[in-house]
Image 1 (cartoon, rainbow, N blue to C red):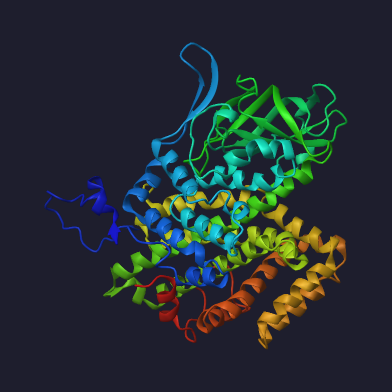
Image 2: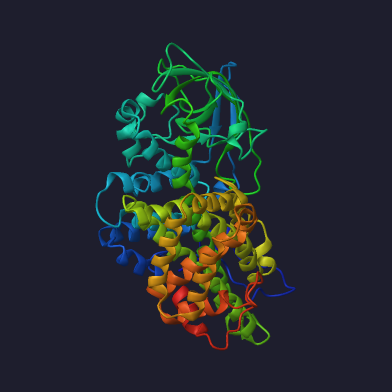
Length: 564
């Protein structure tokens, strides 16, 4: 293992040559380690999913991600951020976003590991678990590059429903090669797909959008349209095409495939107005755009744009869950490493009782988030089963609400473990803290996710009850969890006009119950017992580390979290 000072001379001892003090008891960030070899819970989950065939490739990728050079790239591309060139030297409109070379290198690594299309292209069992593990590993090092990767993967099931488009794009979407050139689709070896839904006046209310699409010729499915309007958030504008929601002539929303270049080789009229100056996600470009008679192809039927794009969002929401679990994992690892080497009041921080409570709480949260992520990946792999579709439809938005919210809070808590060293802006803890909120906001904020859960329950209460029956099979005779099951069943008797207001409480309780059942089934007893004893304690609340560690095996928890 290495520390940052081993590879970057600029970060060596700043007091060298001075005589006022010696630098001691300082702990550099942990880099230069295999992210998979040091994660026993993830390795167990992969074996359980039957993903053994994928493990050698994942192990190689985890080692590549853990190299000090990869960490240096991740730090640099979040400091040297994308820039917009609207025109070339002679005044021609190009709308091109320029990136540091490291951005392209990390995207090429991800694509080379077959993590874009693997779940759709590879038929071997465990493929979704393997993909989730790869995404989880990458997200611990650099999250911004996962934005175009997420949208491209999520576009595949939608594009598959459009035979002409799919036939033209399949090989480029399935490619494991990287092609960062800005060229028409037909000239690319591989492509990236983005999405454009959000407008100024609507936000999450996509039906309030005003962008118009007029048919050229007869229109209809697969027909050519001209789009006029704007998008307030247009993710990754350098993608080779975007799926865009716009209103068709009858006023109903449609979903359109809008390439960066028209089929005749001219640049499409998608004009980037500016790049967003975001709190985090700095390596990735997000933009505002205007369509000025932009070329687009209707996907699906007119009026079916929202269901079409929501299918894509189902996949991107899973990515948000796994990505937030990745941030929780990296925050935990860095906090543990620091606490094991930093001394205060005559002991290492990791030996201090109150700090041990904080670290144990972080470890429990991290493993629970990972186990839930892999369980959802299993559901996506087996979605032909009605029960698995319930996990997809109901638990995915609940998990996005809970896990993404927890990442926002707990990256801040982990930052505090490092004290002032965590708060500086050139460290990984600061980057995790700034990055965490994007997954909670993107693809539907917390309230939208909870409303989605409540509507799914109201639409099919029997599916929800069947889900609870499945969870019940895992809780055994645990009285605490059985009481929680009955309480959730009882909430169905709440009048609909009152149930919506309980959305956040309902989603939180559902996720905690699902996590507890998964830990009881798959993790060592000392993990499950600690999670249940803390999360279902009436005194448990939002303050990390406010748990009774006396009955817990804290040593075992921390050793499992990251072997010393």
